[in-house]
Image 1 (cartoon, rainbow, N blue to C red):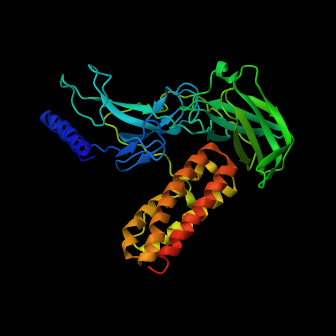
Image 2 (tube, one colour):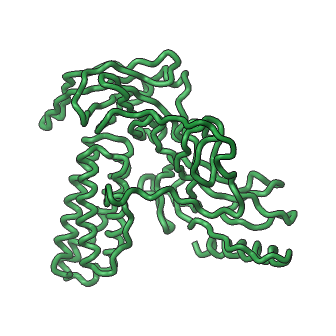
Amino acid sequence: MKSILATALAGVLLTAAVTAQRGRAPAPLVLPAISMTCVHHPDVLESRPGTCPYCKMALVPVRLDSAWMCPIHSTVTESNPGACRMCGRQLVPVTVALTWACRVDAIVEHLEPGLCSDGSPRIARRTLRPHGNHNPQHGGQFFMAPDNWHHLEGVYPAARVFRLYMYDDFGRPLTAEKMKDVHARVVTKETFDPATRRTTELAAFPLTASRNRSYFEARIDAPALPAEMTAKVKFSDSQPEYRFDFTFAALSKEPLAPALRAAQTAPLAQPVAPVAAPPPAIDSDPGLTTLPIPDTMSGILEQLRSRHKQVGDLIARGDFGAVWVPAFQAKDLAIALEAHVAHLEPARRDAGEPALGRVVRTAWLLDASGDVGNRRQIESVYATFTLAVNDVLAAFAEAR
């Protein structure tokens, strides 16, 4: 990591020196921080070198940035919010990898700006990351399949109508050919026997492809709002069946395309400063608000207790896609508590230290199970997360 930072600093200083030689004061270059990610699991992001919690491979550096992309035309990527210049839809925030390359050697990508061998400045690139676009495109709820490639969106556009849209890992609609391999149904009523772990479907409806194979649709019964329904999907005959649990507080609304106007967004500029996505509404959901880690042990424990409750609230209302926010903040709080383990008595230290590790691991599992939208799975992980949090609170209780 030190060598990466040194190289980045050298590139910034070199660019500033060349600019100064041309008689202009150098503008401050603000770059996103370097993160560490897994090649095979790009949703894994850490601030320090290490190994992937899933495949145990060494993490590699990446510089992540925010950008704005058209939900329909992924080639339209801008540095600022606005409307798509091709269809007029509002751009959505996405996560991209920020790199620099030279015209003479465009294949080689660098994590920092600088000069090419011919003296020209490197050109900034923004590349959409796998899983970098989890925005629903039709006003529904968006989940990732456990195979880590397929994504889908459930939509409840009208009473008695359920639709299912399919995407790849970049949020692009599946081709009509791939849609032919999919077999799916939607279940609105079922019972589950925890003793036998057997599910009995009481009301199930086949999902059939639309004429142009752009989505699947079923005519269902009319559950009262908030409406809960489960899509059970096989993406091919060789894959297992996956379940995705949807909760609709209201009917889904398809985004409307505004009247197209010229020059609605600015092109990407260089040097590149990170553009942050709009912050969540903190008044409506404090669980989605990032807070600094407290300086005191008691403050950390109180915030951990609050994050645990916020995870439970999100699960209860079916907002699985947002669970990762308080879960990852709980993970960071657990890591911060590691510095206080030495203050515990030996017996409490032996209980508290592994409990912190379980909070970290189950936070990752909450993120993964929230992405795939399986209520039973995420509730099971949350139960384990609850035990770990309670063990941490008990171990550190008297040390405060």
